[in-house]
Length: 121
Image (tube, rainbow, N blue to C red):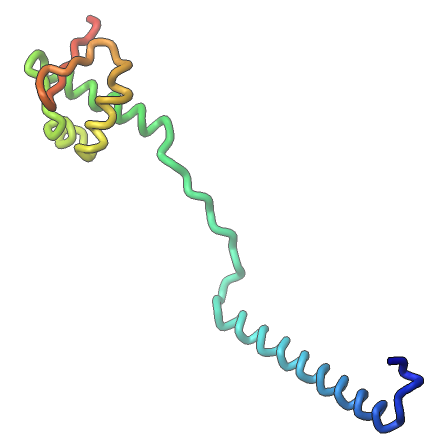
């Protein structure tokens, strides 16, 4: 439908509707500004990415476990004892012993749940 085909009453109704639409859009813009100002007083900041503990933490854990086992001598230590001495959780110690610990020379399973470490010296 072209504008030239509209009657004067239709044209005036169209103008009235456009004015109403613009008024409503300005009201919506004001409401959005108020909502955003109520949400926070600070500007939006992107969230910081979480960092894992990484290799440094694993190295500290490994060193602590091997140090405690070396102190224990031939008798070795249980997983719970190692966890208590290092401050780590027992399941974490058990997983470390059965995975990463397999690669450590001198680390041996003495009995069920008991491990010993013989240093190279």
